[in-house]
Image: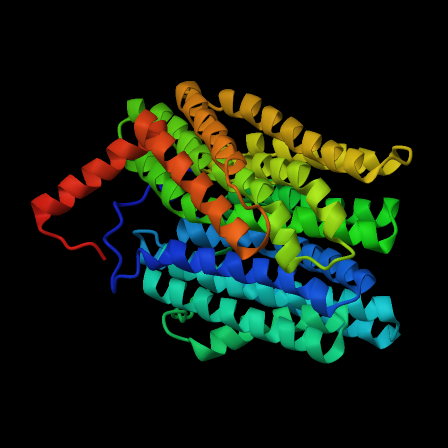
Length: 490
């Protein structure tokens, strides 16, 4: 547990240079770039290569998290401390850890390439991707901790564009999983080279005395994140283990697209709500903290639920427009369990798990993702069953992890569970289904646009009428505040 002197810090000043609103925009752009790669890669790669690429991509993210995540949490929490000398010493320690981890990963990649076998080259690509991803995320964490929101957003936007260009160019030219993953990996250092502003910090000696507290703080938070990242990798591995390349690719594509589409929403909401929760925990009265925790869950659910349901509602027209014909029937059939799984995972990841970090009870954040990962692992031992049965079983593991996380959160301290708001969100989702069912055209671009429009308007009207998660009141307060201050919306 981190001591109180390390945890408490002065009220942060307003970010210099603006860019606050660009932070969630840049995170949405990053998620959309990943979604575009997932959507376009199956058209440029053979089904077997797409399955290898999707699995390697998820493994690369997992390796990056295993190697760097505890340090990233340290940078986020402590790099902007009020004691400048102490913060510099921590950064020196963490920077040394980043250099050592990166060197080990690159040496392992060179060793794998030396074996000169196809799968060994793919392993090398995974390791290179992990190293590049970890360094970039560390740089972004430093910018975020210093409230340099403009540089943070600019770097992520540049990387999003480069990742899409590099990955699709590699797929078009080579048609191999290894090249596409290397393309994604190179987008990280390329973005850092193109935008160097704001990332430098003065050299400092490593404060080795801080290692224990920093490691203790980040260990369980990183473990929970790594277990969460193991979920998509296990899902892809299960598909490859149980089915031939084409149905396995369809299942992979359905879960991959649903997960990334919902993550677009989850990331944007999380960057705002977690910041509010941390401010309340550190600077607000104790009696406000249970209500803010409930609000984080309610607001997250209010955005995650319609995003997940929306993926299922547009699966049929989307498949006709963007999914390869040999994958299309299975993709449509799997859209419902894939969307449900994505929604449940995102609600835990963005609604519940951040509260363990806010409350500094990160050990309690481990059981939820651990139970989900163990349940997915148990499916490897199950006898052969159908494609749809496996998809619904995957969704059940997500529900189990969410339930365990909720029980653990209840044990972390008082919380005002937003049951009424969750009921209002459920009502809004029911109106989405009814509105989509009334759309007269289901196929093609027209069907896709009409379904999205009808479902969005229905949900927005329901949320406004019921004030789900207090969103209507929050919007009205924001408008009144702008009128009083004379501030123009930006």
